Image (cartoon, rainbow over all chains, first blue to last red; front, top):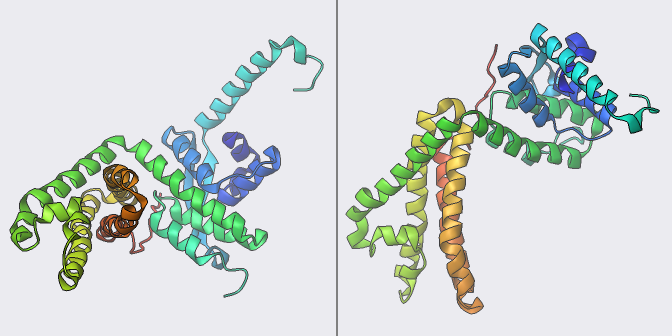
Length: 99
Length: 209
């Protein structure tokens, strides 16, 4: 889900925008620290990269950390989509509903 | 203080007890979102969730370092009891006893002795905790916050297991006299570890890459 959010946000993906995107899509409150914990794990696996941005006064002088999906991350998203589509096809009772 | 400033205590706690290289970015994100949400409850929820989330992430990601830090702290803790305290024990009825049973030694003492004993019973775990916390932090700088919290937590757990059943088993009237000194002793141990481990002194944890 996080990788999809990164794909949707493109260049401007950092903690606040990622959390907002997830909240909009899921309708649930997101703990920002959990977003970072997951992103760090994805970064260790080489699926995302990060870089520090500028610090701003409204952030108490703290820099933003921007995240970007890597080619391996995009590949992972495609694989996950394919697997989900295959699983979806195998559910006859949900045939009438939109995926 | 304007209404747009995030709650100070929550910020202080996250600054000092949040683990990992991204905790500064989390603080920045929370400050930025607080301007839009303007909800102290939301900020507190986020900050108090961030402390355990970042702690467990650090410990899970560095299990060996965490185990080594625990071992370092405990070896130092036991060494202090076995080698340093016997030097002062003739003057204080056995300092090791003070460390583990801070209340029992006070029974039957007259007022001036009682006060000296109480001060000693709290200063000793504070000093030992500070020494152990410093050592744990010194050898695990990259995961300093998480390992110092882990060690402090282990001491707290040990104290609860040691004193808890004892307090629960004595009559309420007796327990009333024991709870205060025991709690002070446990708090002194944990405070010492946090002080020695440098957790009450803020430094930026941001790692650029």
